[in-house]
Length: 366
Image: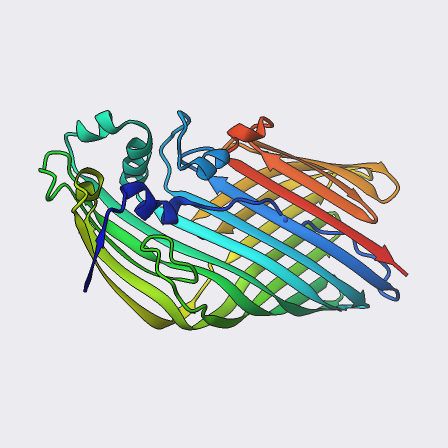
């Protein structure tokens, strides 16, 4: 065991709340003639921040916009490739950040950043519980689809070089009624590629992995069903990843300069697993220019339901409006033969958004 001195609370917990929410995303492009070559690129960005708006995650939650919540998710992926008939080859870049925590954890961190007087006046203890699952990677993929009457099945296999990792948990308790020596007890157990708590210099680990995505589409008369399961199966293997086990009383660190944390540093092999990202869409063709339906989507512990209506705006071009009752989100998408764009949020004052999803796709045929 070693002793760490003169570290502040904000630095210790910021690792688990500091999500880098750069925006990227993928929307469906309309099917083209199977007997031509096709170049395409698409990006997808899914951003959810329940307790505070997305912007506040860049500022350590220094905001008055706080509500009860227990998750922050970011999924960003970019695909580019070339297709011939039903087979596609290409490149993939992706970033996943999933952080789940208790409501007490969110309240504790928010008050510590914004209202220490209220924090120290709490009459009940706060239970701290948090899990973080983050990775960044680049790789190559192969995808193939098969058609049988009105049914289409597809699969995409991606091989990845892993280059960024945060994977672990934090747990403990804060009790304002205790004295400083026992007020905040916290344990952090995690693996990483860059150590930002103890300023540890580490050797960069090597990681390889694969991800399998599945797709099903069915059409009959005026009915259409489309299902995708991204990250349906995945295996991400890190060799000799740096890791730390940190234990201590964080309140001491904020008050006394001679306070200490106990910690262990080591290397470990990690088998990381990403949560499935599932989507299902049912659509009914009302007439030649209007269709309507419902979307369902789930990623990790969050699910969404959306109603939508699609209308034809010109030949082979469509506009879609979506609405989610649970979180009052509104989405707009435009779908052209060679271009696709979609945006979804609960407010178009983007600095106040708790949900912000973007999609963009382009293709060229020759």
